[in-house]
Amino acid sequence: MKKLTALSVLLLGIAFLAGCGQRQTTPGQPTTHAPAAQQQVQPTACKDEPEGEPVITSLSVDSGAIGTTLEINGCNLSGFEGDKNAWIENDQGVKGILHGEDGSTSKLLRIVLESSLCQKDVSYSGMPCDAWFSLIPGAYKIYVAPWGKESNKIEFTIQNSTAKTDQPAVEKTKVATLGTATTSIVYYLLDKPAGSPNFCDGENMDSIGYKAALTKKVTQIVPGSLTTEEKIKATLRLAVADSGSFGENYALTANTTFENGIVTMHSANGWAGSSIFYCAWKPFVEKNLEQFPEVKEIKWVSED
Image (cartoon, rainbow, N blue to C red):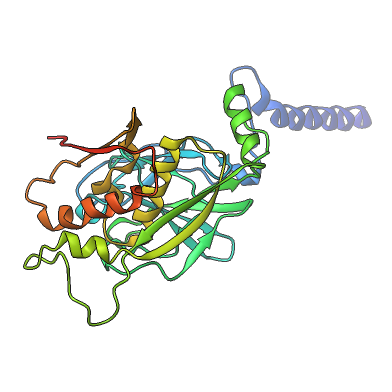
C-alpha cells in the first residue's frame, strides 16, 4: 500500500510539472521567442519639439544600392538653421554626410545614397571637402546628429547595384543597368588662392568676378546612363555638395527641371534679402550649365 501511495505522489508531481511547462502555450497566451538580433527594439514613437532629442523610428527600406532614395522617419531631425542631414557609418567608424533632399522635415528626411560622401559637414565653413568616404556594398549604420546630439543608430545594408530588391519590375531593370552603364559628370568650383579678394561678402557683390574664378574643374563618374535633365541635376547636386558654399536647403537642385531647352531653377523660401547667396549662386549655376549645348535659357522662379 505504501509503495502504491508513493507511486501516486510521484505521478501527480510529474503531471503538475508538465502542466506548468505547458501553461504558456495554452490558447490565448502564445509565446514567441524573438531572435537575439531582433531583441534590440527601435523606438516606435517620439515627440517633435524645439531642439529635442533626435530619434529615428524607422527607415523606408533596410537595404539598397547606390542611388537609392531613403526616407528616415522620426522626430527632432532638423538642426541649426533648419539643416536636415543624416550620417552613414561603416563598421570601422568612418562616416559620411547625407544631405536631405527637398521635402524633408523635422520628422522625415529624404536622402539619396551617393557613391561618394564628405566625411564632415562643410556647409558653413566655405571650404571644399578634403576627406571623402566611398560607399561600397556592406553593413552600415544610419543616424542623425542635429545640434550635436546623436540619435539612435539604425542598421542598413548597401547592396551591389545588381542585387535583387523588393522594388517594382521597372525599378529592378533600372538598378540592373547601373552596373553596366556610367556617366561622366563635370563641374566647376571656385579656385580662390590665399589672399584673393572676396566676391560676395556683403560689401563686394562681384558676380562677374566670382564666375570668372570658377576654374577648378572636377570630373566624377556616376552609375547609370543619364538623360540630359538627370545629368543637369547631377551636375548641380555634386557641385553644390563639393563647393561647401551653398547647401541643398537653399539650392533646391532636386526641383530643377529641363524642358524645351529651358532649365528652371527654384528658390527656397527665405531667399528674399539673401543677396549674398544669390550673388554667387546665379553665376555658379550659369557656369556649370554652359557645358550643355541643349540649354538655351535658365529661368529663375520664386517659391514665395
